[in-house]
Image 1: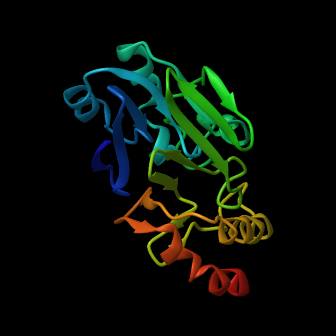
Image 2: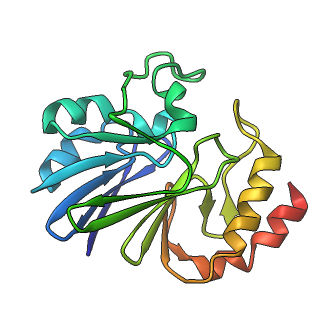
Amino acid sequence: MEIKVQPMGVYQTNCYIVTEGGKDFIIDPGVDATEWVLKNVKNPVAILNTHGHFDHVWSNAELQKKLKIPLYTPKGDVMMLRDSNWMPDLPPSIPDYEVEGDAEIDFDGVKVKFRHFPGHSPGCSAIEIGDAMFSGDFIFERSIGRTDFPYSSPQEMKKSLEKFKKLNFDKIIYPGHGGKTTIKQEQKNADYWINNL
């Protein structure tokens, strides 16, 4: 598996291109991501959103149109793609598939697992491909996503962290902002965040 990453926009939101089995998956194409994505894909098959905040979905519609590939967005965050409280000039996008809860999608032999971790947003999910987990704004290196935004929920985040603690495997975590970490490493920090939310 090959992973390319480029921080996008003022919030330096990580856009990922994941190549597995000869297929390119674009994860969280943020502000002005289109040009970088077009230069770095060979066989794009899908756009995947971890959640619906504007800095992760800004280039959805443009890439859907230019690459003619489907968009997958967690169902709980679909409303944010058309109506952003913070960013009224957000280019609206419409997912081809609304992903519900924990779902696994098979792209001709390449399995993509959405793991639902609400709290930062209602649909917030981590996306697993192979030995990598793309955590969006759920969990970062020694930190977690904010829960003081519209549609955020500290109570749901606590539940998600409890769920995260129970994962009985390790993978490299590639978050929506900042550098990579691992599941096992961040499980050590989960109780701190649960107790301080």
